[in-house]
Length: 167
Ligand SMILES: [Fe+2]
Ligand SMILES: [Fe+2]
Image: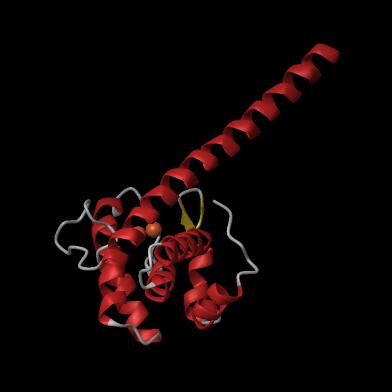
């Protein structure tokens, strides 16, 4: 799931969001073993690609995809379940505060946890695309994150065994 950083059209669509100082703060928050900005860019870019290939509104998908996790809260043991349900509403609030957000973009952001949260349903095809891409990105990031950790642990173990054998 590699992003084409030279995609001119895509970069034009999202550049004002990426230049917003408040939005860029999400980079400091861990998310699925990477940071929240990296995850949001992945969801945005692949939602853009999918919607473009399906002749859907790829501009809304790219923008709302980027903003779907625009919240500055850290997950911990106590708040995980609550934040899982509530963060789309925090993200919509933050998005509306800093950008001009359409009704469709609002729905894309606030319904992206469907079907974990069924209180707000996806009303547009673009909402379904972003919600699905978010889940695929989550899975991808978890798996690659764990494999990085595993490689690191295996590497450390190999060095340890080598040092024990050569001493
Ligand atoms: Fe989310
Ligand atoms: Fe997400």
